[in-house]
Length: 266
Image 1 (cartoon, rainbow, N blue to C red):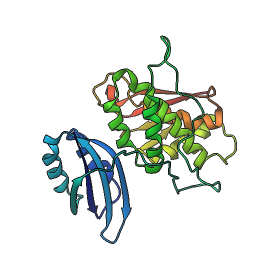
Image 2 (image 1 turned 120 degrees about the horizontal axis):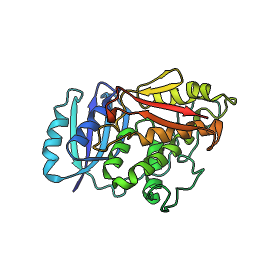
Image 3 (image 1 turned 90 degrees about the vertical axis):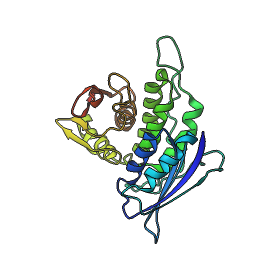
Image 4 (image 1 turned 135 degrees about the vertical axis):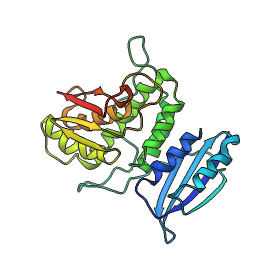
């Protein structure tokens, strides 16, 4: 396995990380971290990836010839740990100051037991959360890469737990100053705009529909958008409490539906 850092310059920011991240994943590599900024050259995207050395030349060719890429550089990455220190996310839609740490740990990770969810690698999760805080909302590729690496027995529990942590953090950062809302209004005014930072989300008759979930078609049967379901729960728990709302993925593109469909019960 090799660690490589790519530096890409493009004239387009929207969709750049998603498009190039898909190329990285399709070639068997994992996206470890990324950073995007504006410069005089254009939009500069730096990506640190890890994968098989025998596939590196093919990945470099596909990135270098991608239609969004104006210039491209690759170099060995020797930066050690890829987990940055907890970093504040500067954007804040409300008047409260943005949190300066990782998504909150309001609830401990579920303990393993014969009747509970599979065990969660809490050390790995706690290492990942500062990266998600730093990169938010450009986090889906990291989560898809994590999903590919996790043992099947840990995927649902781990991704739902991360989603709950991220959702609770986003709620406290952007929505906590609002008044208490009924569930339907919470979905419309909190869950929907938060989801639209990540995916294409629509609301129809209090049902949230997502047409481009990156977690579909991963090879598993059944509903698979565990992170999104967890994040929706974390967002709404701020208004209704952990036991006050239930999020159900009633349809999923992974099972052939046109869109992933989430319903809410109080």
